[in-house]
Length: 426
Image 1: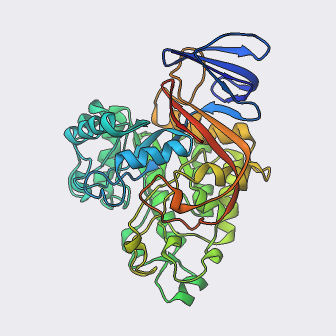
Image 2: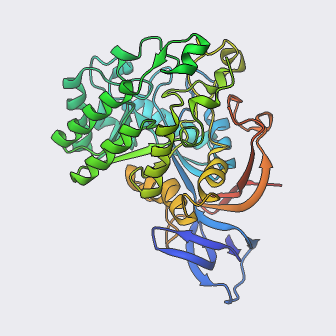
């Protein structure tokens, strides 16, 4: 089957294209990029006038909850939520039950994804067995089975010697180390950013040093091992400074920022509402501004969601007792466009870099490009579509978001995976 996407603004950082082109898809691949005045027939013609046509978005950081916590999310519902957000590839973290910590579990995840997922699933394996921090998982075996990275997401490997060994194994296997930077000894019972809001609500605080100390450690370990290090959900101004210094030192270090961290601060927390509880927490304005500047300057190379669905009953317990995390697959693009692109802090081209081409490079997958011959993973985005976020309409089982009721501008109206339309706004 052939498919022609015509009339849109093609934005593809992998080829440097940014202009009005038609895209011809045949047999699941990009067959040709054509001048818009060139006439050509196809089985299906999509009018993308006024829209961006971009490589499908890639989310380096999601929690699909399956296996073990299907009441929060499943591979099927999580992939559907991602497709609605313009994502064609996502990386689920390994903190499931059982943990994705073996070649067998990686293969299980890939087999389940073939059955249930509507988009591409790229597994992330655990660093240690059961994420217990005591013994390395079979990193080489997981890489051979299809894992694109390892991570202890949800916690840090506090045994520095063991973590260094894991980094060396990841380097040998040619995969990325994704770091959740959190000093377990410092975080304690922290629930919100340390400061006046936490004090007012009577909950323990999480200082910037909780993140910064492990960020510094992991960058130094990356320097000594030569591993490819990716820092997850950065939230502090010093994280930005350390990533900038690491890059200046020639290290293979990348970093992501989540939309909640570049849009909100602790001052936006209205009260005891656990939809504002995430880890790392919403920080101070100076941190938020540094993250935005880091994204604008390309220091922070990726925008990821840290999509973390929870059951409504869990989030109803209040900030002190509720689990960390919010959903993000269906809001990330709109928030990025509303708060960064439409405010002039990111160009549309830079947005596609941060949400597609660079994430693909960070984990080394052949995606994030609409060059001729590449797999046709495509998102069509209406940059001016205004709507109000309504969590009750989410495809995700999780409705836990602080952005319910926000008016936003910019929306994925079609998502194509391997030349097949998997989501279309109707």
